[in-house]
Amino acid sequence: MIELEDSHRPIQAYTVGIQADSTSLSEANEHLKELLRLLDTMGAADVGHQVAKAANPNPKLYLGSGKSAEILEEAKNVEAEILVFDTELSPTHQRNWEKYAGIPVLDRQQVIIEIFSQRAQTKEARLQVELAQLEYNLPRLTRAWTHLSRQRGGARGNRGKGETQLEMDRRMTERRITRIKEELQKVKKQRATLRKGRESVPVPTAALVGYTNAGKSSLLRALTLAEVFIEDKLFATLDPTTRRYDLGGGNSILLTDTVGFIRKLPHGLIDAFQATLEETLRSDILIHLVDSSDPEVLDQLKITQEVLQEIGAHDIPRVIVFNKIDLAEASTLEWLEARFPEALFMSTLTREGLEDLGTKLVSFLDSLMIKVSLFLPPSREDLAALCHRQGSIQEKVYENDGIRVQARIPARFRAALAEFEVHVVEPRGTSVV
Image (spheres, rainbow, N blue to C red):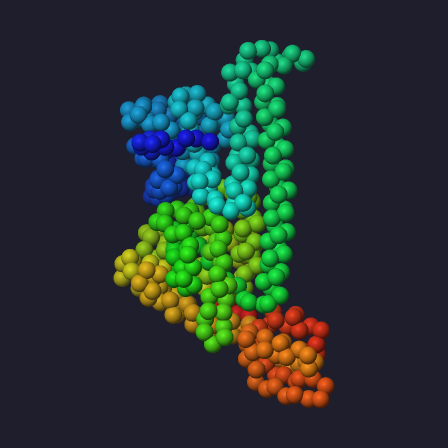
């Protein structure tokens, strides 16, 4: 773990953006700008940065010798304490750069993991972050013990202290990874039990998804008055929060705030947060929030779509919501409205457009309703009341041996009535919003 700041000032970072063959200079600069925001979130200060071309990564230092010397000189001139690369460095590249520069070297993945470690609050999130850290560090353990391994030869039966320590550390790390995965499986089972309890009273669910800092937590607070942490930084919150949103007319939905997405989100972190992402996969609808004021609004929209595709959530009905319209240019909003005519536009700060989202969700819930005719025993008046709460009752007739009910209820509620005589009068299909 890197000590990012002392009691007086943040650590000084020199940052190198990477322009690959498939990346334009403007794209590389946007990626670098985002990395600088990540570093600010992490608690580091930008003392200098540049973009370097890397058409064919050098096997030793990733960059060529001339560019590497230039970067090292500039980093020394600004007295940088860490060097950060906007790419995923191999263990060899990272080790070689630390020998060359004499200061700690981080890549983009390590920066994101560090932020996650600072902001994880629940036991599950802390386990997920630790798993990502250990899997990232495992192939890099040799850095800490190289000086010991040189003290003695490595012939069979005469291993050096460094090699012995390295093997011990590797085994300890692998054992800890195994234990964490086992603990996460237990958490997953606990989450499934809680989810089963929620689903026994079938309240529909919606997941707030989108690029980090698009305003998901702000929207959750605005709709449900939930006390959730909000900060104008990337990855301000990692732990999913679920709250009930009352839509009126007997309609309600559970809203879950999920971890934000980002460019080049490391695959290891997607894997580590799979349990959290399950909340997205099990939702009835996704509310895809986009920052309309961001110059890279379309890029952020695309990135979220790619991550949803990667985790298998691309087929879930979705409504696109462009947030922060109070900060966006009028011409930008006009262009977005023309390009995305089905999308909603709102501001969680001014609350403009919030009612439109409620109306859209009510319309979606209506698409999930079915009209049924069922016969309940006299002792199950409570189920008739539940039909009323979850939908609407058109007719209720008391007969000698039971209660005959005609009602409109959520399709998922049908399973709760499976033991009774249920006839679907008017099926309704779900639709993509």
